[in-house]
Length: 241
Image (cartoon, rainbow, N blue to C red):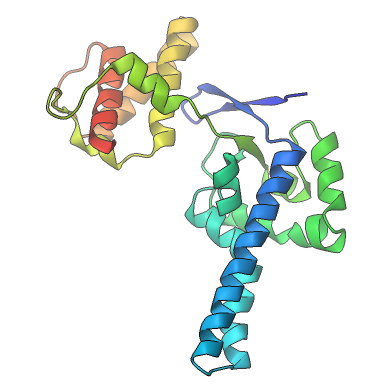
């Protein structure tokens, strides 16, 4: 059975995610294991081909690579490892805030219990029985693993119908510095406001619009906040594709 989770962002907007199931999470782990093995094998081949075999090299390079693999990638790739990215999974905070290094560190540190000491059995049992599909490390770091939205780019293309930079001149170039998650949040906020036209969603729309006006250095007086946010989406699509 597919399970979902609602995350309330710092802009007080609810976003729905599909929780990653045990099968997908195990598959992502297998892919990550293969990546680790391939890199170690390549490194072994390189140092032997140049006639060098130093134990210190393994201790300084290979051991940290294997040990800190998931912590490094999840920190740098914002909740993803190569395995998670390939399967379309991502680690997110259940309170809607951005994950930071300490969150990833807490989650990673409990791999010893979740995965290594119990050969992954404890992690599988917890993910299968937990309401939010959380292993122990997820619970300690207040995070979970979800499926990423796959339809955002297609939906934006259908809604905006923009051809190219030749037919559309972006108004706010700084939007290109944002991430796809930010654009999805803008799109989700607009859709939520249109679907539930109540005070809470209106205030969330205004707050997001105000924040974005500052961040893209908008000098105009904005009266139509929905149109402004839609323009940001249009600019992002044109500038980044």
